[in-house]
Amino acid sequence: MYKLKIITQFAAAHNLMNYEGDCENLHGHNWKVEVTVSATELDKSGLGIDFKILKARSKEILGRLDHKYLNELPPFVERSPSSENISRYLYEELAKALNSSTVSVAEVTVWESENACASYCG
Image 1 (cartoon, rainbow, N blue to C red):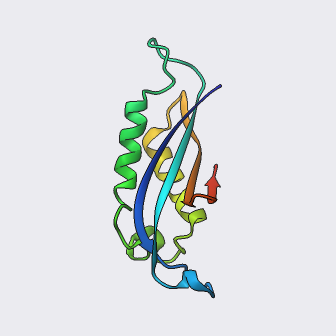
Image 2: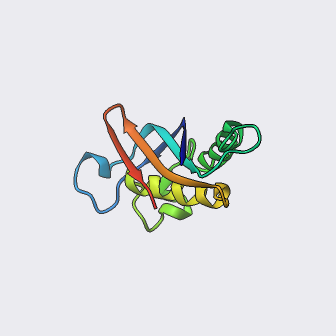
């Protein structure tokens, strides 16, 4: 099994739902996102998946969140846009875009600060 990872980012505003504290107020983050995929075999070029493809699909999906107010987006109208829920959303969307017979999304980690992150693996 091969593991490949890219690191990317997006910026957005949100407020946590059903939460008592500072984060219930509107605020923003510059999220760092780690996308890890597993590959069971390599192609004829010796690649599990071309990083160019992995980066392009990730950029496309993160573009739906970048510079947005997350609470107004369909995935987070009823589900709080916490780092945990953001990582799950990204995992599910990336899995739809990338999973194949040889490649699957293994984990998505969302860092809301330099020392706080949440990961989701299906």
